[in-house]
Length: 123
Image (spheres, rainbow, N blue to C red):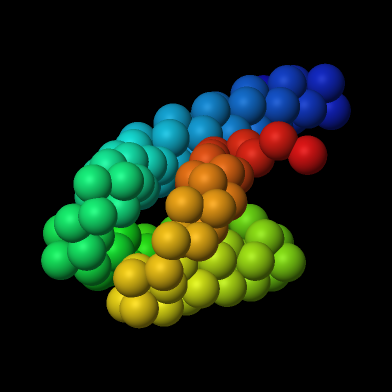
């Protein structure tokens, strides 16, 4: 039943099914839309100088990050994660002290979220 060519065929099909299954499962569970949505709300609040809402959206973004950190770590390298965490913390401090330079960091945070929350990030 399982000669050499047959087992190679079954193994290749199993690898293909596993790859597609992982891609689909990660695609449905990665928090990219949640993160980008909170970043957009944060940007709107900062533009309107509504710092209380900006602080709330920053806390929501931090909570989304904490809840999905393990899944994101499995899918990314340590350098990308460190850079994103650094951007997240810097943005949090700037929002806390109501600094106008937060808009630059929000743009970087959006790019970082697009990168770390992708199933297969662009190289």
